[in-house]
Amino acid sequence: MNKFTERLPHLTLLLAFKTVAEQGSFTRAANLLHLSQSAVSQQVVKLEEVLGVPLFVRSTRTVTLTKAGAALLSD
Image (tube, rainbow, N blue to C red; front, side, top):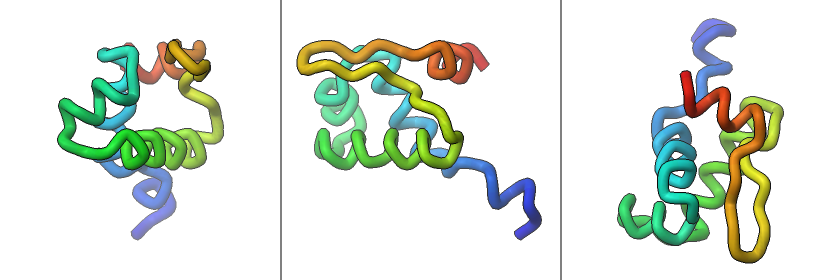
């Protein structure tokens, strides 16, 4: 692999991010993706680590996009 492809996030991470963003919930995203909530959360955390920025502001009841998350979703 070259340096460019080493930095590309895996598509499953992007799908998890997109689904959470669209659903506004890790639980609803997990149900749609037929995964556990924990698995979806781990995928989003991994994507945040790869990109080096937080993508969501998480609270006990809500999930909202950060500016970086909104920019990624719009791309």
